[in-house]
Length: 266
Length: 200
View 1 (spheres, rainbow over the protein chains, first blue to last red):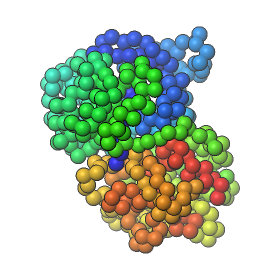
View 2 (spheres, helix red, strand yellow; view 1 turned 120 degrees about the vertical axis):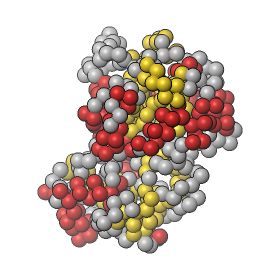
View 3 (cartoon, each protein chain N blue to C red; view 1 turned 60 degrees about the vertical axis):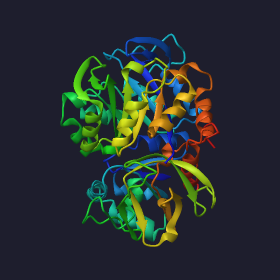
């Protein structure tokens, strides 16, 4: 299986933001036009995380790139998935089985779960029975080896490894491992924790947070060997960053998918 | 017109989005009566083998589907679980009989250092034969997400081999096609398969 390089897009009230330590949020773009850009780059997969604390979607009606009929996150997923022919995962604020059904029905392929897994310990089993493991991804936010939830404000006091083992036993399909302290810091991935989890898990692990340059991708794969490496800010701020990221991985002999052509209609 | 069978156990949005994008004429078949207007059939699906067969049965799809495929020789493409349902049985759901259109069984993926289980991601795939727009010996990457894979009795039906342990990425037996990967989520290489299937 190829190693994956995944752009992760953070949304707040309908707009793309740059995140740092989960606290500083700078608005940087439009989620629908952004996905067209990622399609041209032939990315391996796209992860959207909605970090809104309420459901007020600000779709900037004065911006002509916005369509008038996008009012909720479901509308957004529907628009994005129409032009997204690689896997699309969506997470943030999921509390019910019906939420998952609506997100998948709108066109996402997987949902990303976090806080609900702490609120309702039966939720994952229930969701797996209906949607299957392959549609369910857990995002594990951690600070100093402890897993946090509710926008990283609540310490669960469970260690990263214990929580990941628990999720794997329960049947989760994949785990996104997210170091809150490295969010937006661009000082490299948390190799030690990622490696510890990868070495102890049989399911795919996705590393997130910390990429400052393309060499951080290479280092993460070489040192910790996750299934995929994900990043946010680096893909927003550097021109052709996805392409250059892939080139860096290729020249270090990381087994990745190479796709050179933009999406073709015919 | 391509009929996409709605089993009601998984969402069809990604497949339908691909057809919209490719401007391919399709309908969603909720009842077997809707098979009449179609010249080709797509059997999509995620979920367990038993859930898939139960849905086919409760929708009364099994016999009408066999009729259009075997007697009328209309093309059928099974995607992911849809490919597995073409076979006789699965280790995932012992005692449940599949559509049995192709001889063989579905087995749990063996553990292997090259992938985790579920096996998720882009798998380098080698074409053993010409298959829906791709030529023999071509290589392409497709998006796979599965824990089980088909083991045909006659290896000759396998058209794509992936990983060094020969997972059957795709199969073809006359007018019956199957893909373990998701063509609708495999960018250009996958969309090409759907486009060519629509042109059969």
